[in-house]
Length: 345
Image (cartoon, rainbow, N blue to C red; front, side):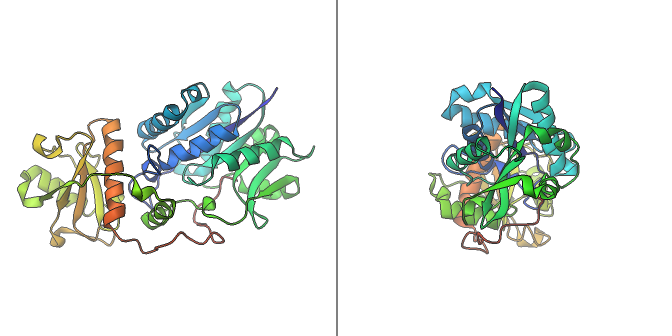
């Protein structure tokens, strides 16, 4: 019997965010991307292809840590596929995922397309969407989630569309394809809610995290250091970071690790000896440059291994949630989702 598979787009650059948003905590033992993959595993009965790009190894580790801890049987269904063209946009990730399914998954009924940064799409919503697809009319090519009749993500597409999805490129996902065939697309309306919102900034993340209670995860207070107390090479590396917005974690908080891709410095053993923790370093305000870094704080973690990096980033993000203010104190309006990025479907 043909199976329903799933593709999770987890290859974005997240250039507007800075730190890799998909790796941020989303409840105990969860990250943004692992929540999306968990929903995909619940909705599909076949393979789940996670399309990777930036920080591919770390995203893969974050997914396997969470999803296999929850259900070791998921290992037989999880597939990871790197997208070498991920910088070109979402369309390349859709086509990469479809290509992997067509090569390995055998006979398919269709595929559920999910975005990696929509963590509040639940397993139950994914199951309902999958069932609506299985119950679709004879000529229906897709079933999309909707709010007030307007199409949202995720969307389940028929295998009949796979050849056309293979040709997608650039920033646009399947939206135009489905718009052209709107009369063949059914909608399953879930109403308004925070599940429709993707995360493009720290404010988006902080509002969602606070509304979902993620910031209440237990954490320990970091050790605080003055810049002057560190060896000169470390000081120089940290000062250079203040002008690099790609390292911004939250307003006024930069995140860096030993062996950081941008700042080549080594921390003394007594500074990062806790392995998976992090320390907070106060920088001189006169050294900070640009609008994004702003305040003089660096959350300095251990990046010796991918696992240590994930743990350090998690600890730093939870600390930043508790210690930095967000311009938006509430979740964005459910009727006005972020439209800066083209949807998967």
